Amino acid sequence: MPNYSTKMQKATLETLESDVHGLISKKTAELDGVSVTQVTFGVGARWSNDLKDYAGTDLCELPHVALVIAGTLGVEMTDGETAEFSAGDVMLLPPGHDAWSVGEEACTFVEFSRGNDYYSA
Image 1 (cartoon, helix red, strand yellow):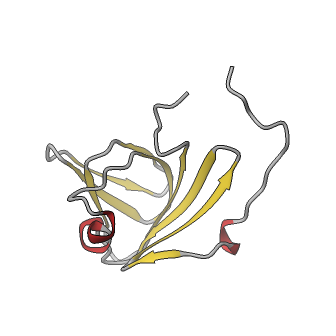
Image 2: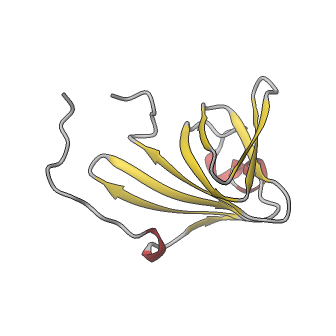
């Protein structure tokens, strides 16, 4: 059985400082072994334009499990598969993708991770 905290924890994303790269910003709350990150792709944002140089990889190599709360995110995988995720959608993105905001509305999603590995127990 996993070793979970026995104490409630709370964080408020709106009070956290943003980490901004071009048109993409994120705020991360760390709770006992779980990171909760609010990511916003501004209008015209694209991972390969705004974060590629910072990440040092051609595509995003992090997995994401997230709930989209506003706008629409377009995603293309290494193999060419594409999809769009809109407000209310839950998405699981494996490593090896590019992503961008769709249309004239910023896309915001909240992702949950444990050490950047959604396969962890």
